[in-house]
Image (cartoon, rainbow, N blue to C red; front, top):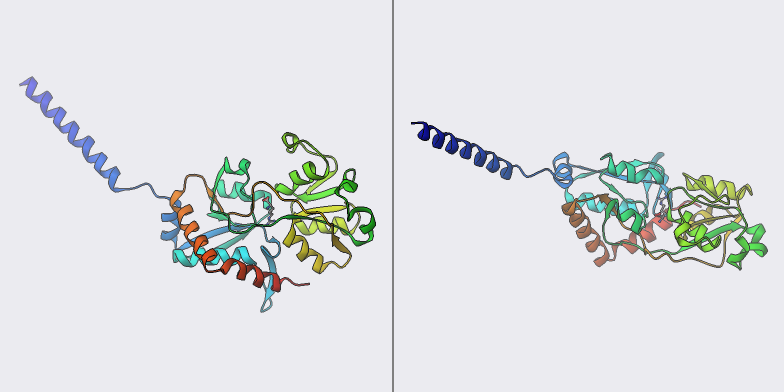
Length: 279
Ligand code: ARG
């Protein structure tokens, strides 16, 4: 009798275990992509101080964020059949916002550097640009021709951006493995317009930014010019960042990126955005 009871209990326990296993199998863990589809909304994080990538403009008297990154985001939302919400913040806050789940993706001309790859996943690269150096026109004879002329000068780059490292390694001559250490002559500010202002006011002597962005700022500031030298970085271009481990979301984004590249749409978006930059 005792034996029968034990067998019965064992069978009952087994049934319970298999039932709960089956229950688990039915309810797949919710991915970010399924949450996006369910909410019918994808939240983009960007730093809209980077024309023609993303910038503020007036449309029908209303402040609006536009740019080719935003056009790409709209296509991603469209392909997913969801709405797009845009959150604008300082560039150096974007990855934390991604980690905390405040945003679903970052499109901000972000370079998929190795260091960032350790913390987030990236889409395929959708655009490539070199980096340019903005100086004052009045200093043309001093700094325009030779990068060595800026070695002991005050430089500026956006906080959290790879240009901080470029300013140190390519202009200051700092070793690659020291690029993280603060440098007294590399000023880091959260917003690019503030750096441009410091340049105009002679607080700093040069600003490093992606070449198309530097050109956009020059168009609006006749007292500034580009130095003749440019830099290429090893990480090669801009990609879209998402929280680590969201393979289905990355795949969906890559599908849209591939379509846009195949249709020549990225170039069209870049041209359109560049035209709408206000000078
Ligand atoms: N490509 C550079 C980087 O990743 C700078 C990007 C700055 N983007 C912006 N929207 N302000 O680090």
